[in-house]
Every structure is written in structure tokens, then in C-alpha cells.
Length: 86
Image (cartoon, rainbow, N blue to C red; front, side, top):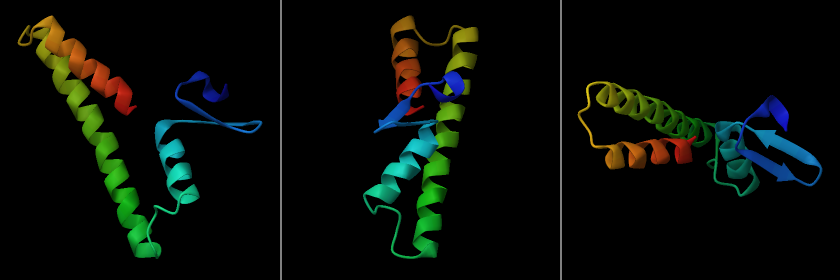
């Protein structure tokens, strides 16, 4: 497994890790990257923004856990969402 991380996308005998790399690979494969360089760059912009938002949500959750603002069930749901978005 490359980099010892999950998720990993297996395509034939090749492995690709890192969620953003996998998303970009699939977007190119299924022609979801835009019709030109500008649209492709906008797709990258949105992908990167979602990635950074995931980090911000995780930071907020961890801070709220520290000050015991959320109950454990809610924190678990947010952490599960954050891991899913990774």
C-alpha cells in the first residue's frame, strides 16, 4: 500500500492513495474536470475548498471536545463524517 495510508484506489496492478489524488483521477477518468483549463481549475478550486473545510470541521470538533461542548454521540458523528471525507 503506497504511503501506508487509506483510502487506496486499486486499478489493475496499480495503487493510488490520498483522497484528493483519487478524486482527481476519477474526475479525469469520467470526464468531470471541465471542458477547458478554466473549468478544470475551478473544479480543483472546489475540491481543495472541500478538503480545507474538512480540516476546519475537525479542528472545531476537537476544540469542542476539549471544552465538553458536544455530547459524545454528536462528536462521534462529526468525526465519522470527517474520516469519510478524508
